[in-house]
Length: 323
Image (cartoon, rainbow, N blue to C red; front, side, top):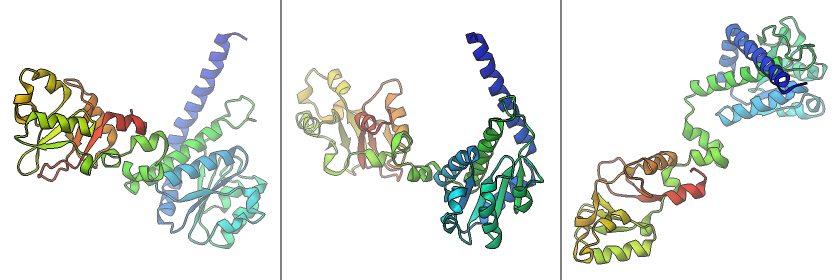
């Protein structure tokens, strides 16, 4: 088989699954809305279950719910029959996945939800299946052929179920006004956590801040630059407001007679600043924008006082994995 044949098969598979997703989008109706109403009114957790390939999708669905503000966990249907049914309780909502709707390992779990009046949302491809006829809310997957061509390997069906889970999670997230700040609480580590770090999480403050008052001789300002180690010094007026900043570029531009000057004669007035509660990623964008690129930003609250509360260096962002 040639490379072109491999590519052709790959494209055909992806196109077939894409067509199935379009069918799914067009098929959404009252079942989808009813499912969301039940999930939004739930006082407990969302229990997601499925067997085999559906189980893999169910795990991902539960993880997506949990990371976007909807408490959820996966229960393996086989384990449920051997004690894990105790992980479900009144107030929870169950979402059960099965392409055929007849998976035998789901029987005990379905019966448990009926016995204890736990709302059951079923997702399957056959409307008259056991799962969907017993469910409080039935979501029927459209009749799309599996991409394998033999209707044996779960492909388009699992892709549709995965997308459906994402659609439910995003609808819940938007209804609850889930914000990037909320998302960060569930993702403190890794690249996502870094991208959602705030300036105040990384900035230097207190005695670490390189600050001098207006009128300070440059000889003293140079000592502060050297002692603090950021390569800059901020200049504050009599009220403590940040009036300017002195960088290495300012020093080079005023080399002649530098030590005879005061900081006001050397500083760049009204420097770029960032709010402490802004995302650190925004600070990186400010520091790396052209004309000129800078390495530090003072963090100044938007309270009208203009007093610097912290300093963020590009190296702090590098260490946090933001850049």
